[in-house]
Length: 325
Length: 277
Ligand SMILES: Cc1ncc(C[n+]2csc(CCOP(=O)(O)OP(=O)(O)O)c2C)c(N)n1
Ligand SMILES: [Mg+2]
Image (spheres, rainbow over the protein chains, first blue to last red):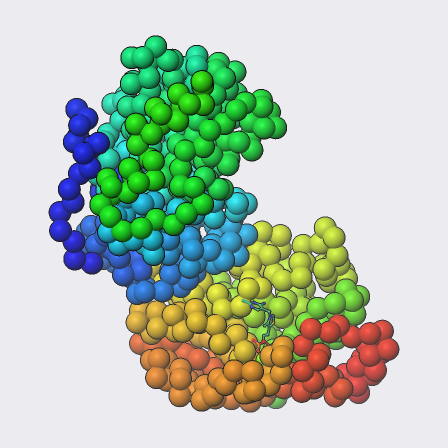
């Protein structure tokens, strides 16, 4: 797919560190893996330029399969390859991978517990101008409900690279949710990703924001503004949405009186739901869910859309103040 | 794997197919539910594959160089279970547990529960894509194993089948041989009434496949077609096997209602009499 170079969002420009799209980090991680291991194969459904699997295709043409515009076949073919001991990574846009091929993922990948890695790009509303048809705000819900499936939403490029290497080394079905737009690098240089381990930047006494994906950066910004006003708000990067880091959630919810979830996804079925489910059973705490409120996305620049749907630091600040008042 | 059939081989395989049908009927009756018609129509094809053509080791289901069989029409699980049991993958006594709580013999095949089942199926339309992936992996590894995939004729109404048809031809998967159990029936009636699927042969040819049209109950014709497929290079092969749904039991043959009905005890008794004749 022809694409012009991406503009970074103003939020991204305002940070000191560089901004990189998680899909770009994926492309690079695949190249590294391709060099390291012979068993890795990559599949795409006519979007290899956008998902960045094209880099792998160029470097390792014998280990790349483009199945054309056929997402259901994509999942089945990847499954077959895994049955011969290969390590398949199957990529397309999140809405098509998890939506069009959901049942293939359920029946074949998850029910048979195959070693298939589903890495989808163009998740959430930051897809931008293409509009709702291409913006997946339901994918985490769709994947989270499947037995055997692990769901990971990296916060930045730094974490993405580590996630891709980690899932290559871990048996089983994985769904990794990546984005199109550039996002600031927020994870510390010495950060080490571990499956099912969250990262607590700071534990707040008034509230703690549990965020995934691009919302980690917004949460950090919001927490800083609030702390400057004397409200102690912590931030946790819950990059593994399933299985959740229960221990961190218990700690965070015991430390404060409000848990805030932040996701570029529907508040139905995503991170907000997952956290609410766990806390209501284990440590009832008020949970404020920030995310897409039972709605579709629409066309606009990614920054306009983040403002329109309230996925900004400012809206987090406002909502947390209201909830604490 | 043998390629030439003697008269004795044909007799033995005919006998084996009869045994498969008997086991299918018994286990379905015991279960009280399940798919009779489509299990019986595929019995001869599955017999030739498991008891003559395929290289496999029942004592070592994961043997790397084995040929693979994907039952895309997963509702015909009883024919697969019968073939696995009679091949020695597990004790025949287990067949009685079909569809019962705790049994590895699920209503539709589950690879996590039963060794010998390559992949879980049951949702129609998905097996050919999986077979393609296996065929690709085998080629990458330089193995000479072959991949067989059995589809229903109603099943090919699923769009994914045609996605997979293109993929197999595009990647020249000549180590893949698919077979359509062309019994002319699906659940709601005749395929031609529910959703026209003809001309099947022309469709697959147009999609870039070698197509062999045979009588799916003729043991020799089945083996000849499987052998021929192995010699055809550069393309995948589709064997269109013309079959009779419910084959082997006169009062089930061609009867759409016996797609998803198990035999009653009385029907089983009559059926066994016919089969033992
Ligand atoms: C995706 C999907 N849709 C519907 C069904 C329900 N179903 C089970 S068998 C069947 C008919 C299959 O007909 P055919 O493929 O011709 O099989 P056969 O005649 O060999 O039994 C249907 C619709 C299913 N198993 N999977
Ligand atoms: Mg049929």
